Length: 292
Image (cartoon, rainbow, N blue to C red):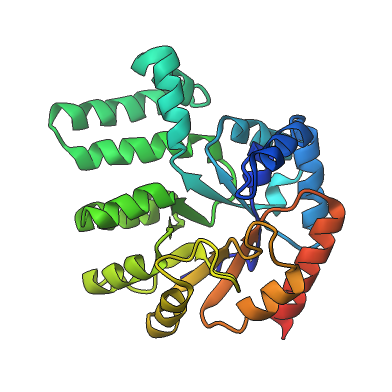
């Protein structure tokens, strides 16, 4: 498997997500309401040798992607799409209906690309071929990332964990093959229950998956428990992109990453930063830990 970047810039702060408080989320929305401030943060991170960026298909993603291209940054960045942005679909469908939703999603595509996607989806619907429909949904989600460097594509933890609960082995296998064959990228998975996911993948024969999961010193968002997640990390073979490493700001970078990199199979870290000082301190410590 191709290696992913060891340090990946997270995106939650750019779209107003905070696991700490609503006040923190509102503050982030205000701070990054101007996409130029987002791009300024990306520039700081590139200077710190952070070449990867996680990005959901949030409405703001298109502006961020376009601005990185205008600023001449896109060639130096590897993007890691997190799909789907389910909340956005529900809101748009309520506001505009199904046709309005499709029109908005297809907006950035060329006429020929729109026809190809709609034709494939239509045939899938008529034949009740739900795998074709799944492929169409993936194509729609990934439209904004056309012509950008994409190393891995992460299935959102909501869908991953739902699929595991439903024992949807066939759909997971389809996703893996579709991403490899159509996007030449690593099919990857977000989860809020690492232990359950890796055990199920092992039963299904899905080898050495790339998984984004919470790992931190205090067990924040580590389900079913910190102990079980760390036990499975040692027992099963997977490449891990660690998230929630600072436990929503509860941990200081030094103690957080000294613990994190004492664990096996941690290949990469995704972390959101809001200021230049925060970026320099956090990524500086991570770089030193990787060197050790």
